[in-house]
Amino acid sequence: MSKAKAKLDFVTLDLVRKRLGELRDLLPASLIRELEDKLVNSGIKLTEEELDLILRRVLEEYEDSLVEPGEAVGTVAAQSLGEPSTQMTLRTFHYAGVREFDITLGLPRLIEIVDARRTPSTPIMVIYLDERHRHDREKALEVAQRIEYTTIENVIKSIELDLATFTIVLELDPEILENKGLTVDHITRALQRLKGEVSVDGYTVYFTPANVTDLIKLRKIRDRVLGLKLKGIKGIRRVVVRKEGDEYTLVAEGSNLSAVLNVDGVDPTRTTTNDIHEIAEVLGIEAARNAIINEMVRVLEEQGLDVDIRHIMLVADIMTMTGKVRQIGRHGVSGEKESVLAKAAFEVTVKHLVDAAVRGAKDELKGVAENVIVGSNLAPIGSGMVQLLVRMGAPLGERKNEVVEGDVKSDSK
Amino acid sequence: MPKKLNIFDHVLVPKHILLSKEEAKKVLRELHVNPWDLPWMRASDPAARALGAKPGDLIKIIRKSPTAGEAVIYRYVVPG
Image (tube, rainbow over all chains, first blue to last red; front, side):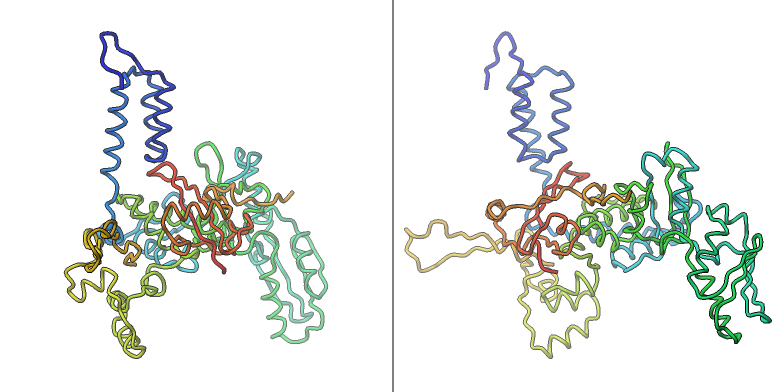
């Protein structure tokens, strides 16, 4: 360290960068970046002594703010999420962000996320468009038409059965046809997939199925005709074009990530869905973790609740621990605990206790919940986690290094 | 023109790096853990498949973290 001289020696920027480089393993990237921004780019002149002092203080402050080993982070996270969720209004505001859709938000949505339901009650996709389609409403509409699942039922004014000739008469709606970018031709081609004769008269289409002589059969075929797919992607019920900033995006009711990502005109790097299982299947477990975090943050923010993102990240981490999205609940995280007492403390107490009794199960009393239940005065959290092992009989000379670290691995799930 | 979808381009997917056996050993020694104590990733996971990871491999994941800027974690590839 340089001694203070009459003339101050300012450190070079290279030295600052070098010192920061040395801290790279000790400080998180965001702090390094901030320090770099403040020390290098601001043009402040520092002596080496001052620089060292700053860096030492930052390091100290950072280390002070780390979670202590043995801290019951899970319990803290549970409390931190549980308390605000009692404040959530049951009167949820729907239409958040998207006027046209009803999106489940608030407490019901939060429960849906941590329960890892197979499908969300309101599946929604936010579809971003590629460079060619995102600046023009017409182009965006084009992509929307490609995605929206359209059947014959969606484009007709009426459907009638002519019982004299056993013919199905479809009255098409020209306006809707144009909206969806379809022509009468599309309809006849779809109908040709069924056995029978098709004839067209303006916007009226006649379809006479082959070998049909009774009403019941004809009715059945009518239902098949109504359900014929014209275009689009299965599962996407409705698509709306929306302007977001200076680009057009699509919002879709229904979800089918893998198919939508492959549609021409869709930007496959930003398009998402609120179906977390689908994300896990298509993009992997890490993406699912991010999706859980995003969804939970969105719900909490929309309700004006401020929960530290670290708690939410912990929940997402635990849910994705095993490589699959598991619910926090008796069929997931809580149900897979090793300890009988901890499981019984969560839900369906009697069942777990009876099962354990029948099996003759043992409880190692390693977790927090078990120890609270049995009234142990040293639950394995905080300082209670440390254990000392001393070999009493050994001669003094051999006793070095005999303080063994506590069983840190027995984290109470 | 259906281009092959690269999942690593997606905003939700962080950077995944498949570690060699030696690198994996080094990481485990540094962290003092058994591989199965790390979070898992199924071999059928899209990211694991894209990297060609087999059960027993270790995958290094560099997450973008809103709190730390960048966070490195490891996942142990398990069958399934």
